[in-house]
Length: 67
Image (cartoon, rainbow, N blue to C red; front, side):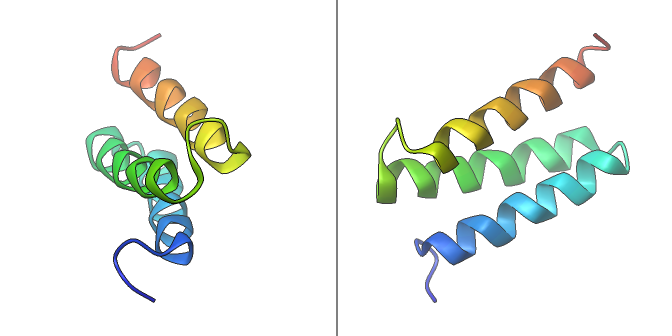
């Protein structure tokens, strides 16, 4: 696996989820963004992994704002 491999993105996504569950939203946001970037490059903007990570990122950002 390389830095742009889909499995790498999935690992980053799971790390983001772990950080988010521990209320470390800033760190989670960073991992979500990295995963999203890979998914967009590999699969495109409309792929279900890309869309789902984007949704998770939006939820995380809402939590950061206290909503």
